[in-house]
Length: 210
Image (cartoon, rainbow, N blue to C red; front, side, top):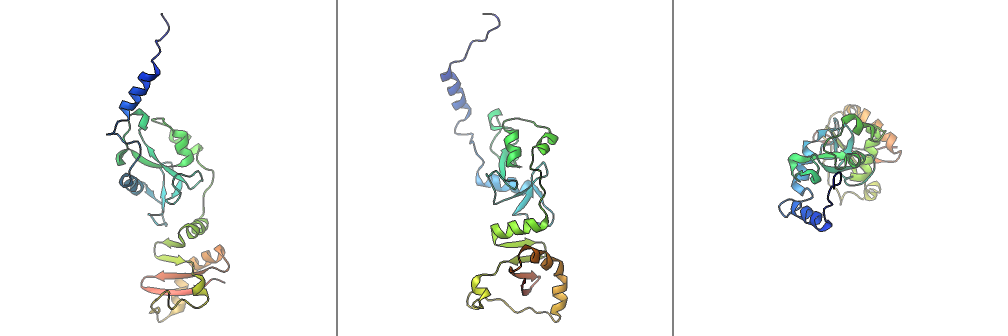
C-alpha cells in the first residue's frame, strides 16, 4: 500500500539487536579504558589530578563520585553512542557531569552551549572543595601542600605508637608557618577544631586549628 511502510516483526528486530551487540563488541568501558579516559580529561588547576578533573563542558567532577547524580558526579560517556555503532574504547570515551550525560543520551552530537545550559548552576570554591576532599579522602592534597585530619589517638597524645614522624628540620619554624599561613587560614574556616599535619618539602609541621 502506498504511503505505508511494512512493519518489521519484533523477532527480527531482536535478532538484529543481538547481532549488533555481539561478543566482540562490549557494552561498557573496562577499567583500563576508564583510567585512560580520566587521564585524558582536563586537569583542574591547583587540585590533585587523580581526584579532580573537568569534563569537556568545563564542569569540575570528583573521581569518587562516579555514576551518581550530584553536581560533582560524572559518568563515562560514549562520544559516538553505543547504539549508533560507537565502541567501548578509550578513543570513544569522555567523562561528563551526570546531568549533562543524561541530556546527551544517545545523541551523536549536541551543541556545547546546550550542554552548558543543562549543567549544574553552581561553582565550588577552593575552600568548599577542601571540605569535600577532606570528607571523601580524609585529607587534602594540593601542589606543595598536604593536610589530613588527625585521629582521636593523635588528639589524645597516643600517636607515638601509631605514627612515627621525623621532627621538622627547620631553624626558623615561624618562617615555615608564615609560608603556609594562607593555607592554614583556609583550613581554619573549614573547622574550628580540625587538626592537621602539613608537609612542606621534607619538613613536617604539626599544628592544631583552634
